[in-house]
Image 1: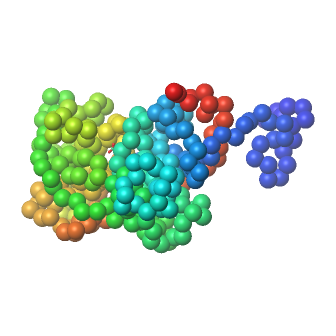
Image 2: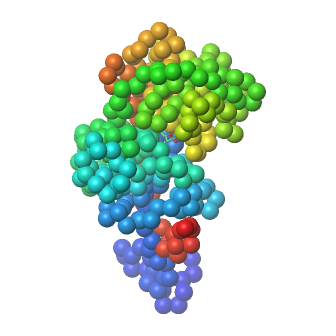
Image 3: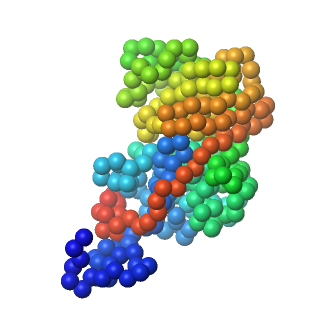
Amino acid sequence: MQLDAGAQFHEGDRFPEGSRFAKGPEFAKGHGTENDFVVLPDPRDELKLTEARVQALCDRQRGLGADGVLRVVRSGDVSDAPATVPGDVWFMDYRNADGSIAEMCGNGVRVFARYLVEAGLARSGEFPVGTRSGPRIVTVHADGRVSVDMGAASVVGESTVTVDGHTWHGFAVDLGNPHLACVTTAGLDTIDLSTVPSYDTAFFPNGVNVEFVHRRSPERVRMRVHERGVGETRSCGTGTVAATVAALHADGDDTGRRIVEIPGGTVEVEITETSSTLTGPAVLVAHGWLDAEWWQHVGGG
Ligand SMILES: N[C@@H](CCC[C@H](N)C(=O)O)C(=O)O
């Protein structure tokens, strides 16, 4: 690379002396089974995270590219944090790629927990993370995997979705965010998830995440998902819990374990009468600074 006259690299420098790069907000990029997120640390609650900024960050051509954004902020600074979350707990302020706010994200919370540990904001092991669904206890394991207590999970109703003229029956499961898990013995590969499945808006007034679940064996299910506010993704953590609840229900059980295969990898889910646990990988890929000028430019209203 040709440097401008006067620009020199020094050991430990991030930019050459004389560079015009201006550091904007710090970020990290990570994924959980290829459901990917931009992490924005905001310990002093200073970032103006507009819908336009979330959309630009998540755009795979004009931004960093991601399925969602995880802002790291103290719960006490979040006006819509549930009262059950203590104010000094780190809060996962989750946004979908379209800029909408969601209550919970199972892959995101694992990446968030891993970020807290790597950034020195939490110690490995067990600690709470604040979410709009309430506090979630996470356990960061020595091998980098993370387990999350996702709360009680059960079938709360039944509904249907239509994709490409074909109507599917599904079990509704509430993981803080809404899911409809459609269990099938047919293959999943030909389902066209390029558009939003048409669902019962009276049943799901706030939209829904839709899972298609194929029971492969008594221990394993395969899943594809269309996420509210994103589109088809390579994994959805809350979706894998919904898929497990639905697959167990279809087998006449309310409790049990399943390995869930998604396009981005595998996770393990355990359902008991009072709780559910999701265990899977959490990978940090990069960290750095957004360009200050770009951040300003994409700010929105
Ligand atoms: N990918 C997530 C779920 C993210 C929120 C979802 N799209 C919604 O709007 O409810 C997960 O891993 O759970």
